[in-house]
Length: 247
Image (cartoon, rainbow, N blue to C red; front, side, top):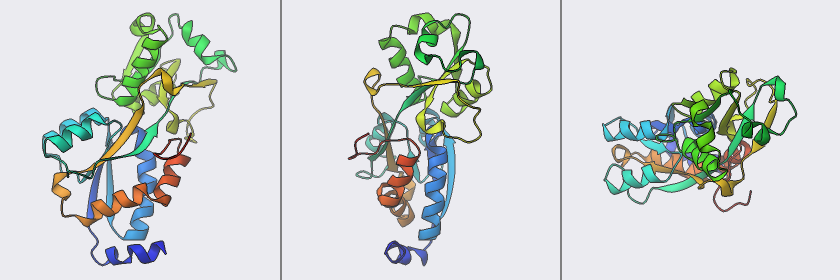
């Protein structure tokens, strides 16, 4: 049935350049590959922090679709006329994890060890550009740890670089996306703690079609696939929540 529904698009295959928040890049690549196989469209992914992608779009970067890691930037794109009005919607809800590979704390309480950070380092994404960094700062503030750890922070440009800092051992702890911890290339976790969602504002991730793709049917086809059963299954498998489903 799915092949039949998309068969009409194959005859009019378009290319797509999708701007993707760093936390969602692996998931987006898998979705893009499945979409291309079914719909026949050529899809390319460009990943960076949502803040940097937003600046690029404001400066005329030739993206067709934005998969952001927040709501604010897609809203600004829609209201400024840089996006297609009515195409903006939530496609995933992210989750934050405190993670460490340090064998010295293997099997210990990750949060308690963070509370006793000492001279060790904590990696977070840049709160000014990356929504996962904003959530990390909110979580630390609500636990009254922010003032204590500020001098020991290692700031990643985006959540992907944040993971590199902690996976390499340059930081003992990292506040990273749950979607990242299943990467087979990661060293074994010494400890991890899934951050309760009430410790930060929801990491609601929204998509929007950009103005240059107003008449590109591949863009609207991709968003339909993203929020359809096949796309949602991939999103959930990579550690996200999706609208309309419980944890």
